[in-house]
Amino acid sequence: AQTVTQSQPEMSVQEAETVTLSCTYDTSESDYYLFWYKQPPSRQMILVIRQEAYKQQNATENRFSVNFQKAAKSFSLKISDSQLGDAAMYFCAGLEYGNKLVFGAGTILRVKS
Amino acid sequence: GAVVSQHPSWVICKSGTSVKIECRSLDFQATTMFWYRQFPKQSLMLMATSNEGSKATYEQGVEKDKFLINHASLTLSTLTVTSAHPEDSSFYICSARGTSGRAAVLDEQFFGPGTRLTVL
Image: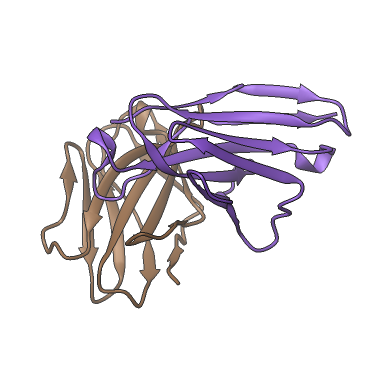
C-alpha cells in the first residue's frame, strides 16, 4: 500500500516570492499518479497539479510546478510569484491505478503581504 | 472539470437522531464514490468506497452500521449517520470517479464541497 508523508506542518511565504512544499511517498507499484490538492478556507478540495509516474517531465500549471524525483520518491510543489489567494492547506496525494487516494497530513501555507 | 455537489452543506442535529448526506455527480456518471471525514486542520480520512449497485467497502475502524452508505444510481450516493452523537461531529466530504465524458480522465476523483455536521 502507498504511503504519503508531508513533513512541513506550516510554511510561510512573502507575496510575490517562491515557496516549495515537500512530499515523499512510498509505493511498490511502477504505475501510479501523484497529486497536489489545495484546500482553501471554504474547504473545497481543488486539484492543483497531477503527475503520472511514467512521465519523466515534471508537470507544470501556470505558477505551479513539481519536482518529481522518482528514484528518491520525492514530489515537491513549487509555487512561484505567490499570491494571497494561494493561502490554504495543501495536500500531497498518491493513487495506485484503480485504488484509493492516499493523502499526506497536509501543509498550511500562509502568504504574507 | 466535472462537478460534484453535496447536500446539505451544513446540518445541526440532536444526539440520537439520524442524518442523511447526499452526494451527486452533476454532469457525469460516477461509477465509484468515496466518503471522507475530516477534522479541523487534519487530513482527509477515507471512510468507505461505494460502487454503483453494490455494497460499500468500509475502511478498517469505520462502523458500517453507524455510517450507512447507499450508491443506488450512477449519479447519487448517500451517507446516513445513524443515532448521531457529538463525537460524530465533523466535516464529511464525498468524491466521485467516473468513466464518461470529462470525468474519464486519468482516474481522477472530483470532490464535493463538503458537509459540516454538528451533533448537539
